[in-house]
Amino acid sequence: MYYIDIDQLSNGLGKEAYGGRLEAYSFIDTSCKQWFEQFTADIISAIGKKYYPVYRIADGELRFLFGAKINWHNKTLKSILSYIKYEIFKTPWKTSWGEEYNTNELNKLKITLQKYISVIAKEGKLALYWNQNGLNAFTEYNQAMQFLFARINTRLNERNYIPFHFGPALIAKNTEFLIKDKNILFVSGLSEKEFVNLKKNIITLGAKNVSLHKCSSSSSLLEDYTNVLPVVRPDIILVAAGIGAAKVLVELSHLKCPVIDIGGYIHVLSGKLTSVHGGFFVAPTNLTKIIK
Image (cartoon, rainbow, N blue to C red; front, top):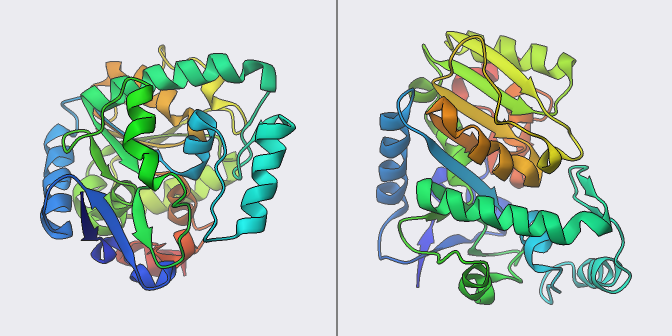
């Protein structure tokens, strides 16, 4: 494996948000610029034409799939308490973003999620939080990553894996290509009030049409998206649905366009938040003046 410095993906604090180091694992010796430009070109060529799912997998998804692990190098006490809570006392499962799933549902939902991940790995990209960083944040799965995914019948390789930060970077760095003159569908559990602000901002950035399919903010993995048919056919779909985003991505394949999990960055686009990932991402430059 190689380490690739991905500092240039940021439109905010850069790798300083991660203690001065942010290097993604890579199967090939490349540069961030080359890797990201190829990914961007693939997405742009698929807009409005071809199904292309991108699913972000970080600590929440990894913990859901493979169980809690202890991080001995960052927030160790919190990590130990989380391990005790979920692995020993089997507390009902909850993410930092508010998703909650009953313990009795977990095994079935894990199997379901594994199937969706397998589909996404074949059809698009798994955007994994798989890096070395200066804070040692969420690095406890690093050494076992390939083994863990092989265990759920998904073999990670250079064709199906990209760094976690690539999805939001598409919007932060390529607003012109992804938004202007496009029909955008958002799938998220955000409030109607926040969507009004989001729609206003995205329209101001040049989008042709902006619509929302509202999903559950606490249990998106349990909903059905197979019959979603927007009035205006989307050119691109941007998803913020937590762990359940995998189900959204797979079940919207009939809309034949890129379906990209952008997670909490949706709140920066709406103006609710000023940044995500410790300041690594802020609003796109051409949106900053609008929000202010």
